[in-house]
Image 1 (tube, rainbow, N blue to C red):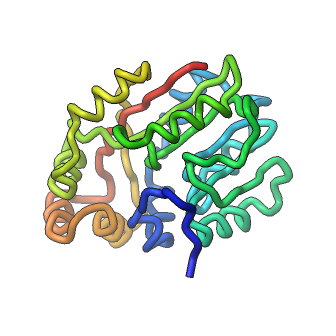
Image 2: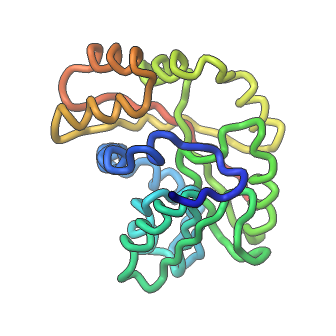
Length: 232
């Protein structure tokens, strides 16, 4: 059985079906718009970069190509093991099995922290925000990428799957903590129809997933996100 770091927020899509989530990672944002938006705000060439909730480490090699050091943190021990395996030949990458609210890092040791679809979903993530304030150096930045539930079919499907999600509460939370935001118009592009359908089935409740599949012709779909950031 995998070990789960104390306080971790369950992530059923990747925790339960990492192979399908790998297909999703490959499909999301083929243009690299998210990375480009973050780098425009705070470049990480030669920097120490922290990937919080790194999963199987999909994004670590890309970060490592420009950063001096990349640190992945993942609360699910089996996924952390896969991330280490993926990056075994990258000398500037390390991976820790730990939670966002208990980072195994020294104070002021990180230049750029990134969380994609992991932990920082609004109210309740204050312990993780305190950890960001502890580990990010002066002049550094933290980024959070999350689905924009207010836009498009994807946002509608998400809202039907998680009706307790309050856009108003989430936006008020980030405003209160001084984070900035901008929309990201991402997309998913798949090579096979079966892969698209499998991804929709791990992202949404069963009846919503079937509706999403019926509403999505072809191999692509819009994936509206929001980028949040704060300088330190």
